[in-house]
Length: 203
Image (cartoon, rainbow, N blue to C red):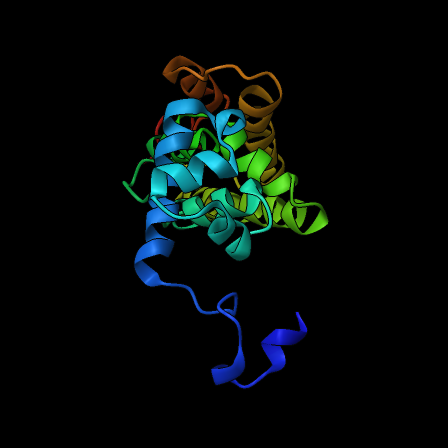
């Protein structure tokens, strides 16, 4: 507010600076509560109580629980590097497992989607960016597979990656279903065999 434009010495205690210990206590409490109660069971009051801080402290730093949860899990959402085992199908399976782990963070798919989408268009944009960021390693490993002769050159890579992302999002977020290892293996088996004289392994 306007008070934030005053010199630091004259600002009230609700200024932008956060006590680092209290800040981390709130984020840790948030992660614990989400793991115990699920996204819908978490409230600002419960976060404050678990963290041992005043409720107004939490409200002063975050406007709602979606904002707290988003910050609490932010460092766990970034995609890792593209898997590179030398086997494109194994790489695809590893990537799919990682995507499922991200979208079911702390055992609840609504942690990611709810925390982001409930923040309005900025949150939805962050969700789109998150999915794009996770799709890029998959596209990269597929391109590596084509370059290494392990996948056909005419394979529609973007369409395959988009379909995989869509499948995982649909199952975990919209249907609330668990995705088993067998389901991921079925997705990987949809990849065509490497090009070769008889469709077998090249080289």
